[in-house]
Image 1 (cartoon, one colour):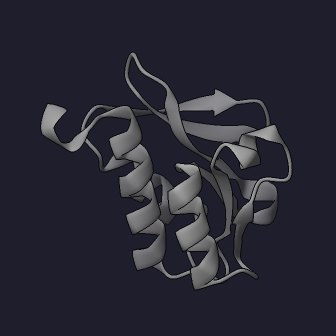
Image 2: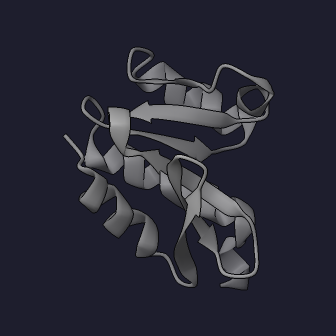
Image 3: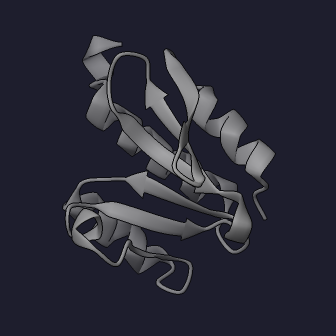
Length: 108
């Protein structure tokens, strides 16, 4: 199980990231750029902003705990991770993918 604290530590470990309130969620973004993930304490879930192709791959790993956000955002790659049932390694890989959508690997 991944706690809110450990999810925050994972998301904030990437260079240039910050934590901001985002409605009822906590958002994680690159300073001066867009958000790449959010966390909701009420149900211990994270929404991680992947490409649709990456989303399809992650959803195949564990469709019970990883699934598209049920709206237009989900159609564009926003993916819910139920943190009580997903491994830390899978979440870290998804965060890395989402972060690199904002800051390409060769631009860090």
